[in-house]
Image (cartoon, rainbow, N blue to C red; front, top):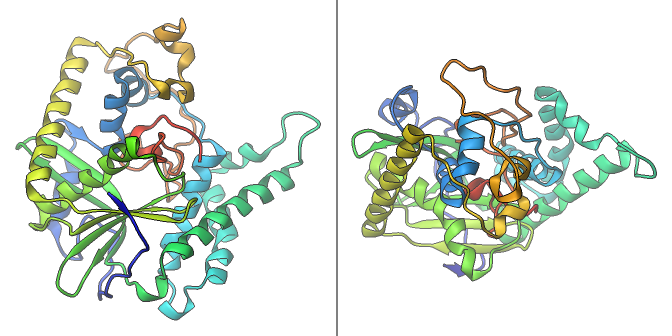
Amino acid sequence: MTAQTASPAPPTATRTTASGPSGDASAAEPADRTTGPSLSPSRAADFKTCPLLFRFRTIDRLPEQPSADQLRGTLVHAVLERLFDLPAEQRTPAAAAALITPQWQRLVAEEPALAELFTPTASPVPDEADLLADFLAGAGELVNGYFAVEDPQRLEPAERESLISTLVDDELLIRGYIDRLDVSPAGDLRVVDYKTGGAPREAFEGRALFQLKFYALVLWRTRGLVPKVLRLLYLKDAEVCDYRPDAEELERFERTLVALSQAIERAKRDRDFRPKPSRLCGWCRHQQLCPEFGGTPPPYPEPDDPVPGSAVAVTSTGTGDPAGTRDATGTGDPAGTRDATGAGRPG
C-alpha cells in the first residue's frame, strides 16, 4: 500500500445507487436471496476479530448504541454522497459545509433516538447545543480533510453507496455497500472508501484493506474486471492509500472467505463461539457478557425467540442493517475502520 496525493479519475457519464449499472438485473439478483450462508465485510471481520463478538452482533443481535464518533462518520459519508448531486462547479468546501446541518437533520428525522447522544446527563457539562455544535464542527473538519486529498469538481463517480453482491463457491452470498466507484473512459475501476478515523500504522494496513478486497472480489465476479485501484481516503489525516490487486490475489481471498464462512457455519451448528482476546477487547461494548472479563453470555437464542430490542444501528443513510452490509462508519479498529472490525477505537 502506498500513501500519496490523490489523482482525479476521468469523468464518466453514469451514476447508480443500485446493485450494479442501471438495467443490470443480474447484479442485483443475489442480494434477494433469503436462504443459505451469506457474508458481509463487517460480519466477516467480526468473526476474524472474535467469534463471540460475531455471535453477539449477528445471532444474539445485542443492542449497541452508536458513539458520537461513529455517528460523525455516518454524517460525513452522507454529506460526501450528497455533494456529488451538485453540478461539478458547485462542489466547493462551502457547499459541502452547507450540507452538514441538513444531513444531520435528515438522520435525526429518520432515527429520532440519535438526538439522545447530545442530551446532557449530569452537571457541570456542556449543554445540548454546545455538544451538538462541537459534533457538527468535528464533521466539518473531516469534510475539509476530504477536500485536502481530492477535488470533487474533477470527478464524476459511476456509483455511490452502491449495494453489490455475488455468489462464490456456488452457495456463499457475499455483499456490501461501496462508498464510491469511479470508472475511467477506458473502463478501469477504482473503488473508493472514506475513512473518518486516523490513517493506520503499517501493521494494521491489512485490516483496512480487507473490506476493499471484499468489494474488489464482488466486482471481479460480477463484471469480469479486477479493479485497477483500491483507494482509502483518510479524512482525519488527509492521507490517501492506494492498493492495486490482481486476479491471483483475489482468488486467494475468495478461498479465504469460503473457509471463513465454513468456520462460521460450524460454529453455528455447534453453538460454539469462543472469545478471542486481543488489544481490541478494550473497545468492545460487550465485556460484561464475555467470559474473558468474568461475564456469562446470554442463552443461545432459539429460532423462534424474539429479537432483542435493538439500539439504533446507524448507517450512512440512517438505516439499520442486521446483516451488517452497512455499518456506522468512521470508528474502526486501529486501522481506523469500524466496519472492517466492528470493535475499535473511536475516530
